[in-house]
Length: 127
Image: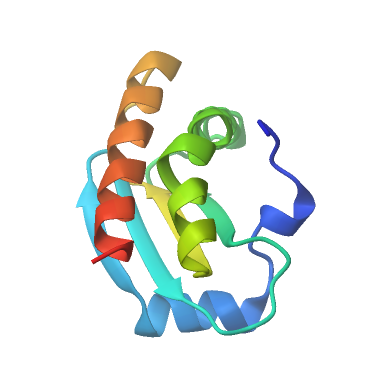
């Protein structure tokens, strides 16, 4: 239940390109979210990509720390916020979560914002 398997990671270059060119997006500071419905036969109902800008955070240690915190917050909150609604509707989406803040936030702040982000995404997907 609280897992983040390889099937849930977005690695397909064609899907990533389509996501950034054709997808919808919204801001939920400190995150920018891009999402797109997909017809491709993907193993999970949501595939997600986490990104932190090299321009804002020069050190790889800082980028990796933020991505780790984002992945953990997503892993713990995805089921109740997003997966349950998508599986009942039979929809599949690809998702990109980019960190656009200027400072390294604590895990508590990132988790609260991730919960808010997933709620907003759920509302937009199920319109």
